[in-house]
Image (tube, rainbow, N blue to C red; front, top):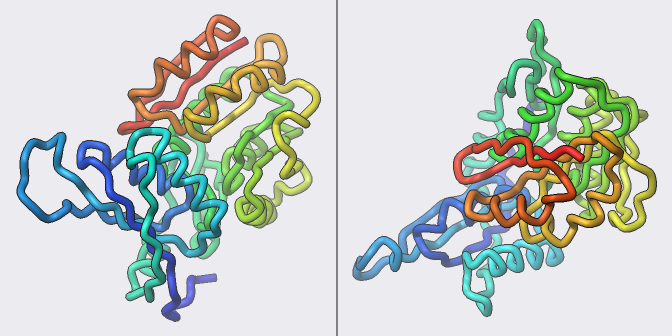
Length: 296
């Protein structure tokens, strides 16, 4: 079904950040489900590039206070906004750009085997497995660099061996869990603490006829039992670092772990946290984002 042309209201969030960090900050908003971001230089006398400030205008279809709090905390912990800075929130009427963005969400390939498609345009392409994703307030249509990178690493792994049991931590839109199923995994557990994200993930699983293979849950990682052949965690470094003991404990011998949502300048710290318990096999670069592959 094609998206409606009816105008609607959207939530706009404005934060100020150093111009040198603007692209990375916009990436954080995108990771939390922003439909789009504008980066505007703060008017005034221009000094050095390091001192130039930018305002980011991020637009959301829906944004609850809990999600906004997570975004603000992430930006603050990464040093992208001041510790006491509070975002400016307002409601704006869509002038048509959001609808146009959805129309521009056309099928696009990822790696050698996958094709990400919206529900209103699902072509059949030879030698590619389609994953249908309805854009929502959840991390992952596949466009974001960290999701894109994780999907690439997953394809490479499944081309080498079979992964029966998979755990997807912070599933967002469910795209990684669905990809694991379509690449050959038979039992997938996908968890996320965000109820809105889980609703979107369950809808996407239904669109892909994958609901029976994936068990979605709002349970925290501490309550997950059993061991897995592959774990994916496309979150953020500030979460991945303290989560390390829990993720490592859920890996079977010789299992693989993919971590993403990591900015380039944070990759070394994440790698150091997971070594020597795991072997660091590969770092994939996509713009300012890094995806890391480990093996137990």
